[in-house]
Structure formats: C-alpha cells, structure tokens
Image (cartoon, rainbow over all chains, first blue to last red; front, side):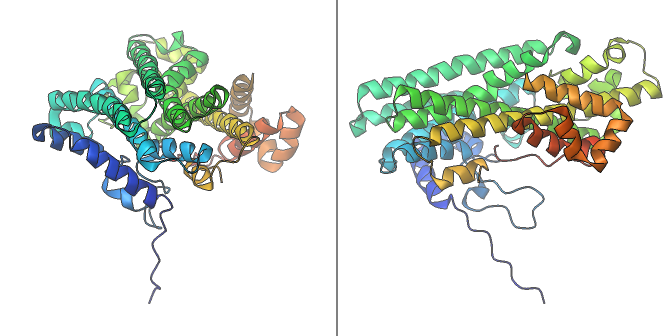
Length: 353
Length: 65
C-alpha cells in the first residue's frame, strides 16, 4: 500500500489570508448587484480568490507549482523586504489595489482578444466590461482608503500617480498590439515585439514592484531599481507565455499551422495565430521564412515543413531571450541586495532560490 | 547585443547539422569557442537540448500567471 503523500506546505498561505481578508473588505463596498460578477472575475485561475489560493498544486500535478494571487503577493513581499515591520493593513490595501487593477486589465484583454475564458462565458461581454470598470474603481478606492490610516497625502498621491502612469503605458501597449494584428509580420522587428511586451506585462509588473517599494518608504533610487526589476520580469513573463502558447499549439495541431490556414487553426484559448498577433516567435519565424508568408497560393508540403522549422526556431530563440530577461532581472535583484537582502519568501515567489 | 547573439546562434544551429552534432557531443567546448559571456553561456547551455537533441521545450516557468 502506498504511503500517504503529505500535501506541500504553502509558504504564502499567511500572506494570502491577509490579502484575501483585505480584498473581501473592499468588495463589501460594492452594490450587491455587482458583487457577484466582480467576485467571479477575482476567482479566475491564478487570481487571489481562486479556489487554489489556499493550497498549492498536488505533487503529481503536471503543472509546476505556483501560488494564486501572485501580483499582490509581489507587492506585499517587496514592501516587507524593504520595511519588515510595515503595517499589514497599509500594505494589504495597496497590494489588493494591484490585484484589482491586474484583474481589470485581464478582463479587458480577454474581451479584446475574444478569449473564451470562464468569466467571459459566464458573464458575457457587457457584464465583463462593467466588472472591469468596477475593478479599476476599486483599485483606486483601495489606495484612497489609506487616508483613513493617516498615511501622508503625498504618498497616496505618488501611489495613484504610479497607477495612472501604468494605465497609460499598458493601454498604449495594448493599442500597439491590436494595431499589429492588421500589419504583416514581416514589417515587425524583434525590438518592436519586446517594446510591446515591455508596455504590456512589463509595465504591470513594474507597477506591482513600484507600489511595494513606495509603500515601504523607499527612496527614489530604490523605487526605480525595483521598478526596473519588475519590468524585466514582466518582459520575461510575456515571452515565456508567447513561446509556450505557440509551442503547445504546434505540438497539438501541427497540420493547421501553415500560414494560409492560420485563420482556421482551432478555437485555442489563446488564439494568437488566428488573430494575427505579432508575438516574438511569430515575427522571428516570419523573418526567417518571408517568402512563404507572402504567398497567396496554398503552400506545398516542403514549404509547410520549412515554415514549421522557422516557427520552431522562433520558439527556441524567444525562449532564449526570455531566459536572458530573467537573468537581467536576477542581476538587478543582486544590485538591490548589495544594500539589503530581500526576504526569502520573495525569492521563493520569483523562483530565484 | 545579447538578443541578437542568441538569435544568430539559434539560427546557425538550426541550419547547420555539423554544429548540432558538435553541440550534442561537447556543448561546453562549442560554448567556449563561441566566446559567449558567462550570462549568455548559461542561457545557450539551457537551449542545447532543443537545438541539438531535438528535445521538448522546457516547461513554462509558470512562476507568474
């Protein structure tokens, strides 16, 4: 008889508990007609209120272990790294502002990309958009609530300023991403793809780190170091997603990946190919296989094989560049740690053990 | 620029069977011969299974969601 396997200990459980309590407190201010929809969004995969937020994946899970609510956890742990004795109520409100902000943008992204997420399927487009708007308002409300905790108005303004700045950068990145759908992949450069990744995921992770540093009372230099660290991580995250989405699609439906058939390539949740998204692996593949993409006639078998080889090359290159940005983030963290080591829980969250 | 160096090396390895064989048999020697910085050498070493041995891409980091 097999021995019972002990479930893995969740090192973030206490932090998640604090954050969830703060989030429920914030949600309680919503009108009852809106509460369920916003809660539904915050219960999505990986979100703070998701059912997995109190446990990690089982040991035999195919997916690597990761905690739910990683965005607010990042903010909280950055703050605690700088200022270990920080008031949890204070940083908790700032951290859940990040969770609401990220969730709001995720909903908008899902609507724009027509991804068939559970939330979109349950709520439909109109209510999803309204939930997103409510979450954006909640993110501001969470920060404004610091006034009741006697936080200096100048700090509250700086936090709101960072939130506003991130919104502008992220929406500009989203706009470039949407417009890119109408342009041929051959027009794009590697640099442009990385710029878009920096504006989207990069700016959001930058915000999560910056708010944490600001909340801890870090000086301008340290705030900027943590902001840059977050941006590098965000770019790596985006490239990781882009190359793995395409890789798994390639593994699962190789026959539908020829360029002229991209529009019919399954109803994949992340249908980047079908929408004409110009992710880095696709752009790199186009650079390597320009002729096949420009042809209007159906490609023959040899051309299909050549295109698939270009896609595989684009995927491996993107994976390499993803690892490069992770390394750059790690280097930036080491620079930060010349002043003071970050707490082990933050390293654990980031996978920098 | 490091991004370009990664792109160039992956492209060469994808198109050059001899280089792939060398990478498969003695990756450290190739990485040293190419003169990569320590940071790039670490990254290229992680790409060797995909470049030379036709192995699956490493799983997503999934450290973020």
